[in-house]
Length: 226
Image 1 (cartoon, one colour):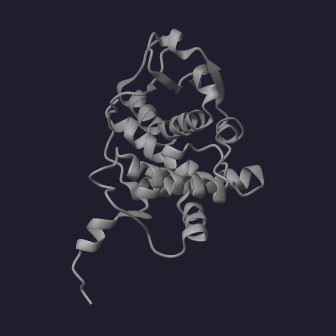
Image 2: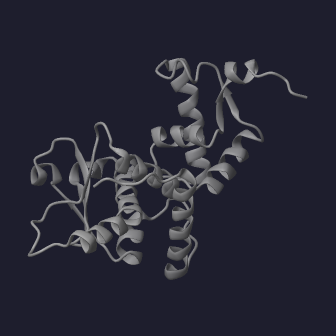
Image 3: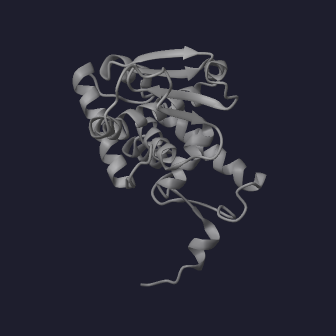
């Protein structure tokens, strides 16, 4: 399915709306670790299945899949040993449900479907190169599992005001001298904010996305405008 451009601001709004509605229905504020399985089953009313999805779909790199007509989200059983990856995949599939199912339903009305469809997923999450719909679902997942307000609170509690400056962030992300302190910071934020179902790697990139970590050289090279 081809999907239109969706801004990060629109994805932020979609996540905030979902969390707010979930909190109202479940009768409690949703705090980390964000219960993505409850959102799927108790709020959205979707069946969640952990299955051998790789064999089922014949794809060795498949992580999860959304079946709109069946009202089912299926996640590969290999992720059971990887809590961060499991939660992110479930949140990713929620992203498809919130961002892309309305487009699917509209397409059904416009084009029309006759007879019974074969049971195939409408979206498949894989570990390789990602088309726009998958990138959008990833961004949704990151915001759902790591809400901006709560990440900022945890970050500022351990680091104080201002961004964390790290030399070589932009040009040497593969170096241990960069990955090491970046990961330590992400781990500290995970612990402080109780983001126990989020991987260190996911938090690293969330901190970067929120500009809570910045390249030291780039910051120092900026002209003083005062």
